[in-house]
Each structure stands twice: as structure tokens, then as C-alpha cells.
Image (tube, rainbow, N blue to C red):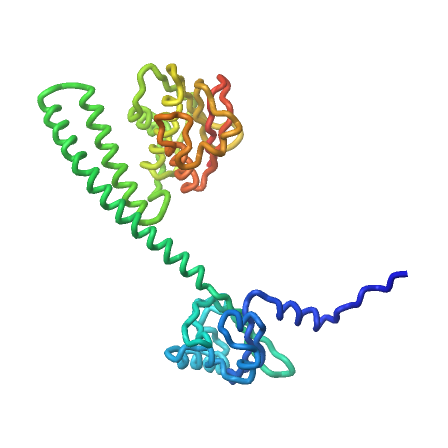
Length: 340
């Protein structure tokens, strides 16, 4: 008969958890004397348990911050008011070798045998800060690139707008009116992209807009020949970023037109069971095996395509907090359902 496994008393169990925790745990009394340090503190700050226990917490505090730390603890002991974020604050700690380590510290207060203690949970965030710095450098480079690109686009755009205005003065041509509208649309897109890249957002300010009106605006800005647009029912209004909503529709229309070798019929209507709209076509459709892939940057089944159209659509949808699904239309083409 097998004997029962040895039991671990509760105190031993919790001690084992603390000793093997990935985060450093350091406990001080109300006089700032260190009474406990787990092994993870040595991995983070280089001090062994023997070197820390019994010493002042100032041992791990950079000299320039010693007075601040001392005043914060004294103030709390005297008043009970927390003037710092106990749930997580970024503070530098002093390594045994003399350099500072960026840490995230959470504090907890507890009593034992009538005495007051404070335990800090210490996490080394060196790698996190390094990644944040790298991301900031990337954002700075992207902002600089956006400035340069905007400047380089505006120069020929201004020239094209100027010559178009001159041509309109001398010729009454509907084609020139369409050129002028397209150039104005490019101008608006440049402003929108630059503004959003600077703010780090996917959409800008929103307002109530008439959906059908923006369907027609979007259709007029897409190069179509024998392709047709059909609006199936009343669509009402939606609160959206006007420029980005138009960009969404333009890309859906362009996607249907560009991926069909024949004239395509596109229909837009309201979803039956939940708020939203569908954009469906009678083109070749999108295989179900690539429904997720088509929203990725650079993915395209058209050799002449950039692969950014549907990626932009998904960005606009996500920026508004909506959802988008792809199904098959009644005619066997693609059907995009946008739910809000």
C-alpha cells in the first residue's frame, strides 16, 4: 500500500511561492529598515539577501532621490494619505555596481504582531523602456517621413490644381470638373493622413453623416466605366470621421472594380439583423481560405495592386470600433459586412 504524499504546511507553501517569484519582493518596516528580500531582488539589483536585510532601504535608492523617498514614507506614516501611486510607479533603483535600473514598483502595507510593514513588488522594466524608446524613434522617423512626403506631394499637386483651374476658365468640360474634384480629394487625404500620423490615431473627429451621400461621393471618386452602383434601401446616418469613411467606401468599390475582368455591379444596403451596411458585388469573389489574409498589408491577388486597399478598410473599421466580415454575395461575388 502506497503511503500518502508528504504535506506542505501553509507557511512553507507561501514561502516557496515568494522565494521563486520572478518579481523582486522587498519588505521594510516603518523606520525604512529592510526586513526581507527574496532571491529575485539579487537578480535585478545585484544585492544578496544577506547584504540587504538589516540595512536601510536607502541602499537601493539613488542619492538624488533619497530625500524624496524618506519624505514620502514619513508623510504616509504620519497622515495615512498616499501621495504616490501604490499600484505601479516607475522609479529608478540603485544597482550594487552603481548604475541605475529602471523599475516598476507596486506597494502593499500589512501588519504583523502589531508592527507596520511595507512590501514593494519590484519589476525590472529595462527591456520595456528600450522597446518604448525604439518605438518612439520609429514614430519620429515616420512623422519626419510624413512631413517630407506631404511636402513632395503638395508641390506637383498645387501645379496640377493651378493648371486645371486655368483650363476650366478656358474650357467648359465636365471631365475637367472631375479632375478638379479628384485633386481636391487628394489634397484632403494628404491633410488627413498627416494629421492622423502626427496624433497616432486611426481616425479623427467624428460627426453624424448621411451614409447614402457619402456612398455617391465615394463612387464618383473611383474610376468606373461600365460598372454600376445600386443602393438597395434607406441607409440613414452614422457617426463617423467623414474623410476616413469615404476612404473606406472608396477602397471597397475600387477593390471590386479592380478584381473583375468584366463590368461589375456593386450593391450597398442595410444589414437585416444588426446595425450596419453591406457592400456586395457580382465579381469573382474572394475564396474563404484567404478571408483573413486579404486585410493584411501588402496582400493582393491582383499583380498590379498594392495590397493596401483592404488593409486601410480594416484600419478605418477598427478605428471607429466597428467590425467587418467577408461572406459570399448572392451572385457569387464578395460581400463585406460592416457592423456598428
